[in-house]
Length: 98
Image (cartoon, rainbow, N blue to C red):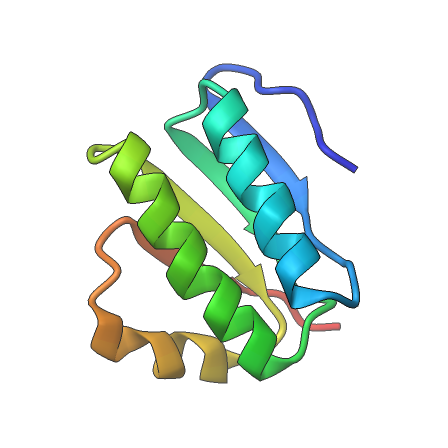
């Protein structure tokens, strides 16, 4: 499920039914990796869970890598719309049509 960090870029795919399990997996990965720039695929999640994961994940990532960036692959433009008020400066949302 996790891909190796190459050239300071990595991809993680979160597809568990449990939002808490996805958050735990992402947090563990951020804590244990040395990737200031990463991509997270959350296309399998619903809009609410994807928005929650993106908000909390971006915050966890920013704490460890203030100058880093995190790309979120999402299946709905609504995820970006819902998270925009949070001002997640380290996040970029990439829409992937399914």
